[in-house]
Image (cartoon, rainbow, N blue to C red; front, top):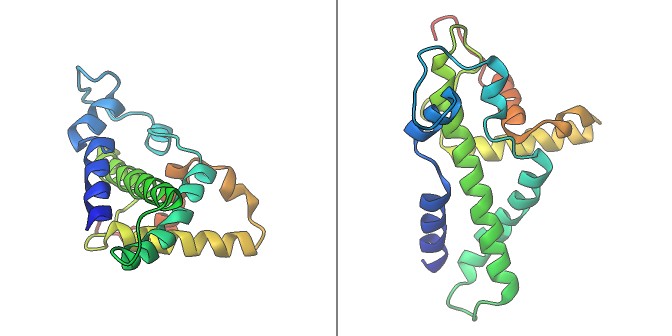
Length: 165
């Protein structure tokens, strides 16, 4: 319960609202542009390196285990580190997905089609498995992308746009 409260508070602080994401993509925070931003800006709107995100996301599994142990033992400094990194991963992931959701419809052609009804946690889990496969296959290029670019590559592969979207 404590971890969930910490995670919720951190997510609220770290995540920008869709309106703010639209404003950032449009240029300045004070004015909205009616023209869509350049294509590459969607993938680079918050260019968190993929390696950094993966480092943070390595703590999510530990966070789940830690949540089960709550109340059985006192929190240690390592536990706080796990909570901090796991929360940052979840917040960054949610922010990237929300940015993609907000920005994708602004383009004339479908750059990426966000799946409806799929939870962010499921998208993250699928992406992490996909990245493990890419690593096993020796596809090092994917790991040189920013996190948003890698997310878009995964979503395009796992959830291709259909003609009706």
